[in-house]
Image (cartoon, rainbow, N blue to C red; front, side):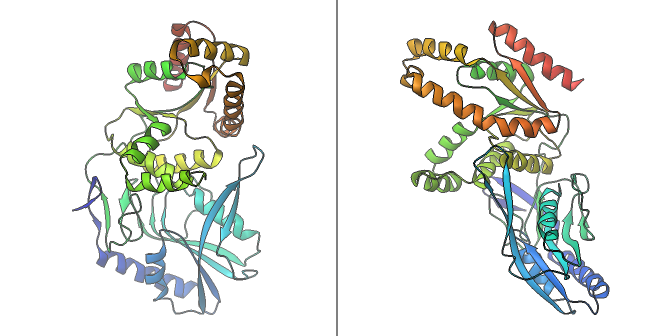
Length: 375
C-alpha cells in the first residue's frame, strides 16, 4: 500500500503485468501497421509513461508527438472552443494512433478525434492502457486495449491523485469504499442573489442527507490552509486571473473523496460554464455516479432587488444596499447560468423552480422535483 496525501491506495496492476500487456499491444500494432507510416499521438498529461514504453517496442516506420486538448471560452454564451495543442505534423492521408493512459467516459477522446478528422488523416485509431467499459459514454470505442478495469479510482503510471502518483511504476486503486453507486443524489443548485438559495440548501441537506459543496467555501479553506491547490489558486487570483477549471475540479474532487459514504452532494457555485459542467461529468463518471438534477430558483428581478434591500437592513451588508451592485450581481448570474442551463437541458436534467412564495412552499416545490426524479 501507498499513501498519497490523505488517501491510501493498494496495488492493482504490477509493473511486470503492465510491461507484459504493453508488449502484447506492440505486437498487435506492429502487425496491423506493417508497411505503413504511422504517427502516434500521446495525449497529455497522463499517457507519457505508457507512450514511452510502448514506443520503444514499435518496429514499423513511425513518429510520435505529444498533444493536449485546450479549451477557452468565447464572448458569447455558445460555450467552449477546443483546440489541439502540439499537433505540428501534417497528418493528411496519414495513419494516426492516439495513445491514452485511460479511457473512461470517452469524452476527451471524442474531442480529439473530431479535431483530428478536420485534417483528413487516412485513419485514426485509439490505443489505451486502461479502459473502463462501465463508465464509457463516448462514440469512439478504443481499438487496442491493455486492461479493461472496473469503474474504480486508480493512480500510478501516469495517472494522478491531485497531480501526485504519476511517477509510480505500478497502478494502484483507492483502498476502501468510495462513492461508487448510481443511488447517490447529486444536485446542482442555482439561484440569483436574494433567491433564498442558502435557506433552501440547508433544507435539502437535512431532508436528503446531502453534503454541501460550495466552491467559495472550498477556495477559502484551501487558501487559508495553504494547501498545494490553495497556493496554486491564490497565485492566479493575485494576478487578477481566473483560476483554471482543472484546479477547481481538483479541489472539488478532493472534497468528494473526503466523504466516501455520502448519500449525495449539492454543488453550489459550480459549474458556471459548459467546460466546468463537462469536467464535473467526467469526474463523477469515474465514481460511477452523475448529476441527477440542476435546480434553479426563479425569481423576478424586482422581487430580488426588494429582498436584497430588505436583507441589507438586517445584515448590514453594503453590497446588498447598493442598487448598482445588486444589478451587476443579477446580470452576472443570468449570464453565467445561461450556457449551463442549456447544457443540462440537453440532458433533460434542468428544472426551473418558482422561487416566489413562503419558504415552506418553495421547499415543497424542490422536494417534489427531486422525489419525482427519484421514482
